[in-house]
Length: 266
Image 1 (cartoon, rainbow, N blue to C red):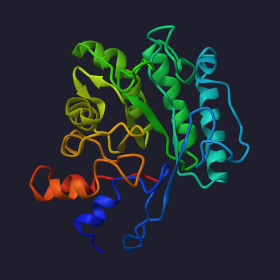
Image 2: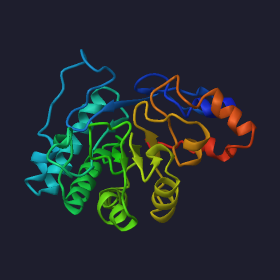
Image 3: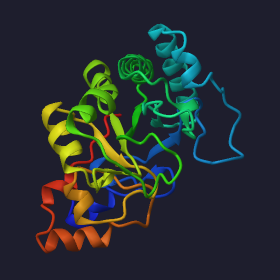
């Protein structure tokens, strides 16, 4: 069974804040995502079921124990399965670049090697149970202040050897099934439109086979984000894709092959 262009595009934007639409014609059921990485919030921001809250990532990193990180991922997967969640939005593997960082508690360390090794273990623990992890936030997203407008200016060596290294380790050692593109710009280009990072490095050089989704409301363009390596816009059902992406394909601004790139491995 094949889908027409509009049906394909409908799969590329969330159906709600934390779900993707089913497509019965091809046997695809609803996919459910939940905030992480220290707990599984579920489909609600508040008022959901009581769940376990684990020590934050910085505290876990202080133990230098990949076994503990694996166990956290494993138990979080059990929490996810109990809520019929398919994708947990974690681990956060941005770096501690300033003590003023507003979300440092979610991330492991200032050390990209330690961060990558712990993230890989966490991802293995989760995905060994059949729940997808999500490496976030790609990339150089180390400031919560002005996160939607800041521009991270990073030379190529630093980008690869510092900021991208945790992602590369987690891809190589655990094959994380999803990643999340950040709010910020990198060298003047939005993370959701980063052809160099998303297409050339992550999908090209690393051979990444998973899915790159936007952070929530981070994607603001149509052709630029589709051609820039983004596979999924969240949340939905509104957003910059939908009918606008169908028209961009029809006008030749986006190749139709881009619209079939959604492939969460769950």
